[in-house]
Image 1 (cartoon, rainbow over the protein chains, first blue to last red):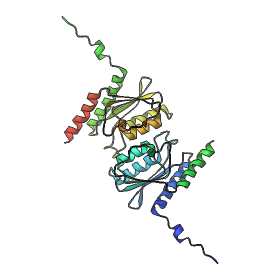
Image 2: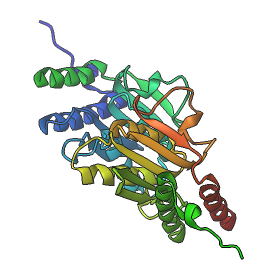
Image 3: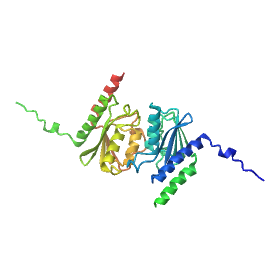
Image 4: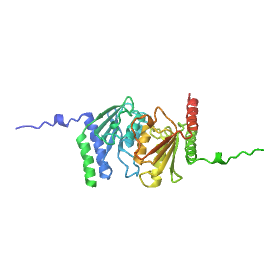
Length: 155
Length: 155
């Protein structure tokens, strides 16, 4: 008889855990017929800002998940900068959102799926804050699959 | 006896006229102790969105004049895109705002003073929408002088 050991598998890394939360936000967007992108901002292990894409609901093409989460986090902090915070987002941020992260001086950006067309990584110059660390590809498949599924249903 | 002819001098070009309106917004910011940057969005000769820098009042480092004016204009239009509109702004937009203008598909950007440090023009790749026309240097001195005066008083 073999036992399945869930121990290690169920212990999520912090990045996995928080990307899971960003995915939760993305699924909320999906349920509202918004392009399914979600984001959370984490400071010292706590989520201090959440958001998902609201471009349809707000009729505002700039109402990206990151903008919601970053402004919510900054508002929560009562201060201006998010130097010790990490932005988790299911899709590689666009130039606008990466530009916003500069002003917030976000400490770290962790994104899920790559966006080779609109992602800020396509630029050959750094537009994030000099101190911002960037990691991509966390839970990449789940993040990308959510987008694929959404657009497949739209066709 | 000579008469002074004010005719030609008082007839402002459209660019001058609307940059004057953006300067008016910038002066409002100045009066509120905000970095004096103002913007208006114009469609078919009418101002459909206005805004000035509100980073202090909103405690939000992303509350730039352009973001206010663009979202106000898009809201006024009830639609999403600003293809036939012009954004007038007293300072060269940053990467975030230029990135936002991409999503709004703004037809034209006319800015006043150049911002060699933070302006999007420092990038060697185009980040505005392929169809967006960009012009800089309109009422450059007045726009720049407002900034200089503001920061001089801050020291």
